[in-house]
Image (cartoon, rainbow, N blue to C red):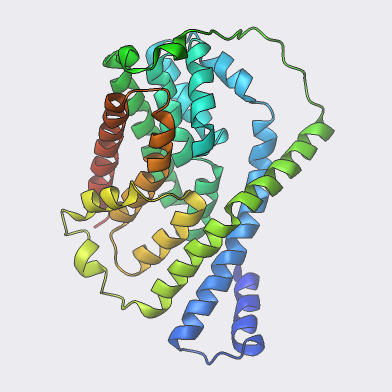
Length: 322
C-alpha cells in the first residue's frame, strides 16, 4: 500500500462527495488528478525542501566558492555538479553566481558545470520525480543530469573560452579565506523554515499551472494521441522536445507535473525527460541575462554542448526503456 493511500481516499471523497462530480467521467478524472497531485507535491516539497535546507545551511555561497576554487579541472567539475543539487538558483541569480565563482578563481569549465547542474537537478526536481515516477526514474534523471553537467563543463573548459567572457569579469578577485560565522541549530531550523516558505511562495503558481495542464491532458487527451507523434519509435521526438523546451521559461515545479501527464499518455520517457532538461537547464531568459557577462558565441557554445548531451540522454533512455 502506498504511503499516499490515505491522501487518495481524501481526494476521492472531495471529488465525488464534496464536489459531487459523477465518477468515471472525463471531468472526474481531471479533477481527481489535479487535487491529488497538487496536494501530494506540496506535502513532498515541504518535507524534502526543509531537510535539504538544513544541509544547505552548511553550504552558503561563500563556502561553495571556497570549495571549488583551486581544485583540479575534473575534480572541480564533479564537485560543482554535486553541489548544484543542494544550491539551486534561478535565472535572476545567474550573473552574481557566475561573477562570484570566476572572481574567486573557479575555472570557467567548473563554473559551467555548476550552472548546468543547479537548475536541472535540484531538490525540487528530485522531490517531484520521486513522487510522480518513483525512485528508479528519479535516480536515472539525477545521474544523467550529473553526467551532462560534468561533461559539459569539461568540454567547455577544454576549449579555453576565457576570451569569450567580458573583460570586467576578471578584474576583481574575491577573498576566499574569509572566516564564516557558525550557525546554531536553532538558527539552522529557522533558516530552513524561512527558505522552505520562500521556495513554496515562489513556485506554487508553477505547480498549479503545471498540474492543471497535466490534469487536462490526463482527463481529455486520448491515450494514443500523443504517442503517435512522440513515441519511442519516433527518432525526431527527442530533438524536437529539446527545441520546444529551450524558449519556455519554467522550473522543475512547473514542468514535471506536465511531464508526468505526457508520459501517461504515451510520450516516450526519454522524450519527456529531455523536454524537462531543456526547459530547466537551457532557459532562454537565463541566456539573455548571461549575455551581460559573456559573448554570444560562448552562450551558443554552451547551449549546443548541453543540448547534445540532453538529446543523447533522451535517445538512450528511449532505447533502453522500450
